[in-house]
Length: 251
Image 1 (cartoon, rainbow, N blue to C red):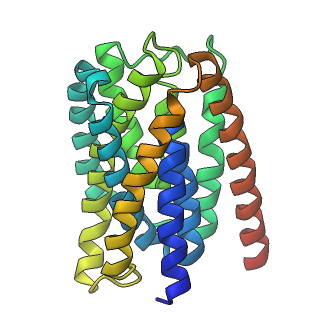
Image 2: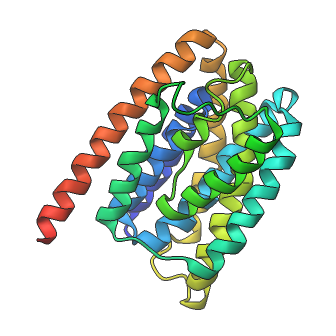
């Protein structure tokens, strides 16, 4: 891997961690797209999982007093079930299909309330959230927007939403690392960034997460949810355009 490619990954890890520090997930979607530009698809799952594990884990630590633990324990049960199923049926998508999945997922946040009434504070839905979100994460590589529809209609504050989603994603990214990482280890880590990239990207992710936490304190709960949907829609359009470009280029 060239120095410029490594520097690109490190910079993307820092910037997207800062964005996630504010909105709780958008940065992960951006990071996955950035990695798909420079890495093989299978490697993006593992690299994204490792970097997001650090970013989400550190964000959960910084906001730990706001975590809704009743949601977390039920989420974990669903996440483990999804990981076990995925270990037997994992299919690695093409780069174009990956961008298509990532472009479609953000639009879930616009589903009308009367169509889908999801609330992660309800025990059965917290369990289903872990199963479905982790399943999408293992398919599309990111599931933040899908996760958000379980939280956007809760009575939780923006700090509780960011903290609890961060904690849930620690387990989803662990599942992704295990499911996709084992085959890569068997192939001597083919396509993965070298260790020096992770050694620098990890502290930069932590720095970006901390910076995002400062910005989070400066926005209201109303603006938090309004801007989140708009930003996700923009990212979705960008990824759909990239998927179309790749499909047309391959035809």
